[in-house]
Length: 249
Image 1: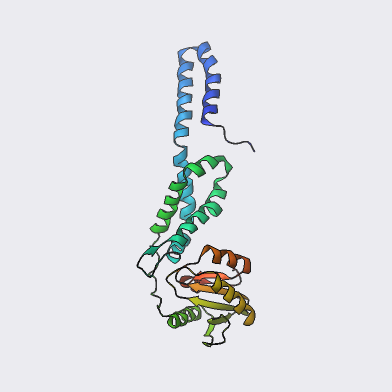
Image 2: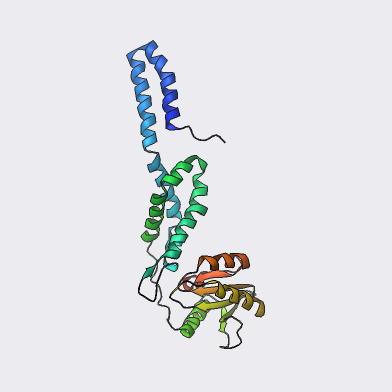
């Protein structure tokens, strides 16, 4: 499919068509040609603004999900630093997988030059959503397991914690609607790595689960995300336990 004509091409053809008419018909045609050239140029100047407005509409349509992901992928580490690495990756993912496919190839040049502004728009739309107050998750590991089991129970799961030894990587086994979810819980001050995903995948087989999940307060490393995508292990923040649906996961 041919791309959108460039502003230079539009100006050129407007001048090519309008110039002879201006010479033939005199001042009125000359004024009309000048006005047409001005309109073409003004439209070009407004193109980035219209592009950003489209990005804003797309981001706003996903505002609640973006706000939740922003909360889930940000945490405070053991040194008191606010870590947003996971959220920054999520913003890029949203642009590349959701926004740009809707923008299309005609505005590919603006997708490059306006990248920073697009990210700022996503950030602003996520920050504008007023989410319900987040529950304080316990800091102790065993208390965190109980907390996650309680949230699953509130969502209609028959959730029970596994024995402290011999659990084969599972902290919680939950059943609902004939489906079984095997969960490993990680209350950490840094993103969860590969090992937890490997253990959850093994626990799913041991406990005859339909799906496995790693639940954490602190996000996940890129390597953990890649392994989870390959093994089908769900990576969740504890806020996501209330709405998990294995039939659609």
